[in-house]
Image 1 (cartoon, helix red, strand yellow):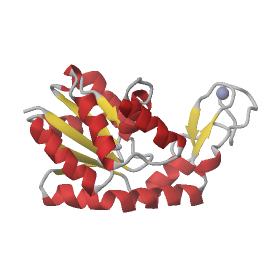
Image 2 (image 1 turned 45 degrees about the vertical axis):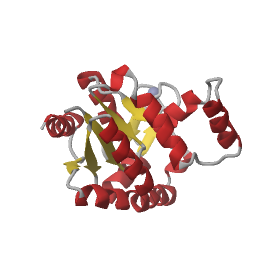
Image 3 (image 1 turned 90 degrees about the horizontal axis):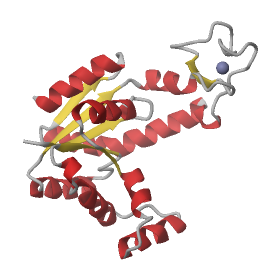
Image 4 (image 1 turned 90 degrees about the vertical axis):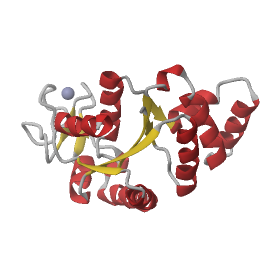
Length: 216
Ligand SMILES: [Zn+2]
C-alpha cells in the first residue's frame, strides 16, 4: 500500500535533508504546504484569489483551505506511490482532515519523528556561522574553522552569524515548535503510527532508518 508520510522534526533536526533524500531516492515528492500555497496563489482562479487575500492580510491560511490545497496537489500522478508531507498537519483538526483524505486515496499514514535533544538543536543553530565571501557554512561546536571565527578558504574573512540564531530566539522557536507538535505526536502515538528516529547521527544512518520504516 502506498503511504502518506508525515515527517516531523524541530528546526535544525534535519527534516529538510531527509525529505530531499526521500524525493531523490524513492521518488516520493516532498509536499511542503508553505511552498504549495505560494505556488497556488499564482493561478488565476477563485482559490488563488482567496490565498492572495490571506497573504495580503498577513493571515495564516485556515485549515479547510490548507487541506484543499494539499488534496489538489496530492491528486497528481507523482503522488500515486506516496508522498512526504512537510509542515502539515500542524493541528489536530488538520490531522483529522488528513485521515479522511488519506483514506480516500487508499493510502496509509506513517508518522516519523526525527528526535534530537534540545541541547543539540541549540548548538546546531547557535553555533552556525557562514563565510560572507564563499558561503561556506561552519559550526563552532561540530565543524569549527581552523582559526577562530574566520574562513579556512578566505584568509582573514570573519564568519557571520544570522541575527535570529541567538540563543534566546532559538529557544523561543524550539519551545513554540514543541508546543505545537506535542498534540500531534500524542495523536500518532495513540493511533500506533508513530515511529521515532534518532536524529543525532549522520545523515545516511538516519535515512536508512526512515527508509526501513517506510518499506516495512
Ligand atoms: Zn570563505
